[in-house]
Length: 510
Image 1: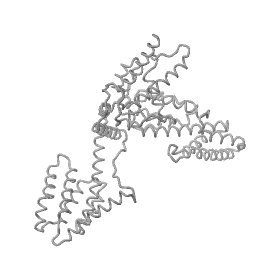
Image 2: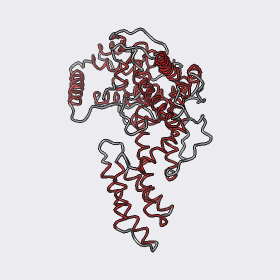
Image 3: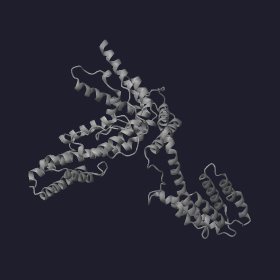
Image 4: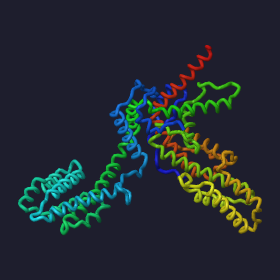
């Protein structure tokens, strides 16, 4: 199975279903018209608070909006560091031939030209050069750990700006010697990946070029240091991330009272769908809100987010994982299409089909449907090309086994069923879609660690490993989300269910 070694962010226990009070406790310790959730975080509108800890409605000030933005940025960064093991920082260069790039080149050229002209004067002027040595000293000191006092003292003595100024006044400053010292220290402090870059630095010759090259390598070393720090802080964040995110989100909520609007709508819609599904199962006895499990309602809502036609704004509590969920959504769509194509092929070939040929069809489909979620992907064209390819491969396989080729009518049926997978009323796609949702929902109910995975439904066996991969990673996201935002979900459930009960009593009295 394609399970990675990745573990959920925290331990996941089952949520209590007896009442919303127990739901709150267990979640706290367990693992169109809609506005964007990012907008709602910094919105200055005043609406009724929907969080467990409410605040009086008020208009947000500019300071509060800026504070909310900072909290959101910190929350997103911390979550990304923990959730994405490959996360790292990179230097951002201006786009080629852009105005920003041209302005940057002009400013840098003006600075270095000015430095060069000063050094060529008689006697040389070292005002700008001394400032650069001061900056280099501060950068080198920033690379040192707290215990390296001896090296810190040495750098401060050699690159003492006041001393260099005095030497410059008497025309006694030795730039090549300073450059040689700087390059030597850089070689000691740099990461192994920068050894070659440092070796290329030359302390003698053109002073301006030497300083340019030194600052270029220092910029690379600073980025290396940032990524090294991220790697070191990741284990500590993993131990504290749930509490950290919960506290940060509560700070956001206190400054932006409408920061749970989309989440409330999402849960309300899930509750409505759960009631409708329950009423269909038990039409005679009717449905009571007491019979609805908040955990199952929440899991149903999480599964709904993977629907391709779900176009509402993502809940604010999932803003940290919206791109990961979007990626899994398109992966799941691709897997469902592959399963449909394999099932259609098996139906057309009948007893002539083989396990090996079905696996071959799966591989072809996966390749031609790669990138199904990208903006420029044309699904209709891809399905038409896929159906043509499968017809060719099918006839080739039949011929190699001395079996009659498909008739023109059978080929037409095959191509028609594959090309029509984009239609909403496609019987096979709807069946696969329903079973995939049931599988994901069942997976979300499993406690961590996932010792036993759900039985794969019929029609999905050919994509079993892909379904397990998607469900496993989505369950990790969902379980950690419940661990962080469980108290907020419980407060929303209390409000919604309490309103339901109050509404029912009012109707009874009327």
